[in-house]
Image (cartoon, rainbow, N blue to C red; front, side, top):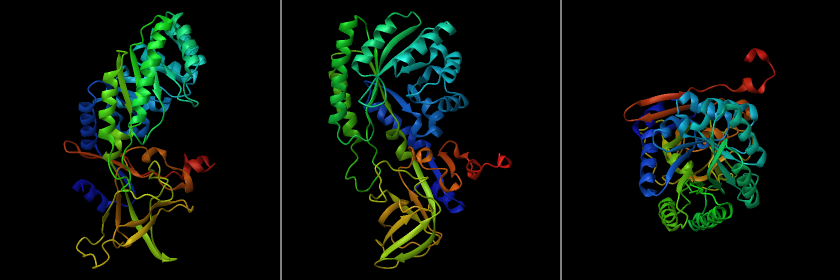
Length: 400
């Protein structure tokens, strides 16, 4: 365990997230080496607190809302690294982005109406905007193949926008590398057809391969290296020759993060040992977890480090529950942590992606956890102090 994490945990007064920036950097560098035939894009929705660090190491940052754009501005991210994405683009917000970033940023088109909005904004700002048309994978995102063809025809009639590529993403946590390989093969075929039909050159693909992060001990192996190897080979086999950027989030960020919470109550009921923590599912979210069915990686920091574990209790099992008033708030069922006592700290691994932004943060008006980053060169930095959030759940204006 990171010694800085241990020291912070022992002095903590509530739950917190701990992001190891050295691990995050190493993840990106390692993936860069394995995917040298493609660029890298960080999907900042998985952890906006890492966007400044990521911007120095990846080619592009995917931005899916005006709020995320504002985060990038505050972090000083170069507009030339921004891919303005997201299924909904409000005209006023998009207008501000185009006014400030212009042709430096790149933009995805999710509908014909969005395309027309881009044309209007480009003409208003006297800019030539670079756009990607998003190909749908069969859901509310993007356009189907006929819609893509229609968008290409419209784009060809405008001098204010430049079609630079196709954007495609079909989901995360894919189970087998064969699926992204098939998707790359389909993209290869479809884009060559588009080029022949329209007599144009499509120079880029922005592709989200959905490489899985290993969250649970139940997962027998980490498949990410195999995914990267097969994706790299699939890209090398493509007949279409252009530039591909791999858009990813959790595979960069998951392993750099830990979530720390304290045991504040214990009991035995119905033959089950329960440990109740000051955190819960509103703050810790693993994709695929269901009422503690799977076992995340957990380390225990005991309040009395000098106490020895009683013989025979090394693998004592506990159902670890959070503080929410719902039976669904089970972080891990029957976890083999050994003995637990009130005051012991639980460190949940691989919590660097989505947990800090995806949970039910406002449910029951519990405080928002502190967020800490660490690196060897900077030490510990507080990115966000613990904050009360009950003010968002009251009509009293005195709270604001």
